[in-house]
Length: 389
Image (cartoon, rainbow, N blue to C red):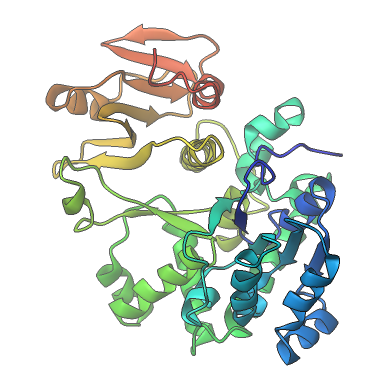
């Protein structure tokens, strides 16, 4: 199955970092969409050894091409961060080389004080499959439980999907965490990972989590930072009219794929039934991820946050663009009641529109709130019409 990805790396006349979590399909995408003058795979030990021994070899090889603006792909650049100095030199050379540099973690680059090319390369993100890429062969319930990592998504057997996701988590622990020496206490981090799976989509209180896990709150913060830096998840900040005050509140944390959450919670064999809280939580996670992917792929200047008051009123997503505000509540039913959190938000804030995203077959309006299907929300984001209606 050949699935066309929404990301494009060849429209830029400058170099690019292409980041994405493990097995998101970076290598496959480049091999099928890019025809570089040189392709370097740092997962090959022979390549890693060559450039570790003599980083200047890269510049010499590019110079020997004797062409203007050659394109060079370096896959998994974090394996040898020091090579970025030669990349920088080749970009600034008379032949003006261009690079596509992939990685599953920016953490090692930052930790080794690597040359991040100082504005000479754009940063792009590749995600697990999104709905718009696979809509012709899409099962919502299947995606909510097993996610969109390409190799896992394209596997037909649910039993094999389960084994692959379990292996994914184990491989992450072994190769991203243990071998890179990101932590000293692997058993503690393993316990944390399972706990974090249950905290997916919740506001993160590091002090509370530290007491439950028996580690310091600083350790908990560092563990979440590892998940963020290895692109396994991201924070969603709380909404506040003052952007600086958002940083002082407890953010939510979301993993980058629904299947990873079910694997961490050891619930891949559980039947996912519509109408249950498990289904509702997975549906909310799915929508948050789809909105995040659409904003990234369409390069929209939209910021995301969530809304919560001290008395418990909550809105799942607040989208802001150029001063316009759109609150979005997520409900997994086909005919939800008017969300109280949205009503609370509308009383105190001026909005461009308000949406309850659900599984309704047709759009309708109630109490100044638009009830729309999740597919319609995604289409509006990719059509760039959400803030224009």
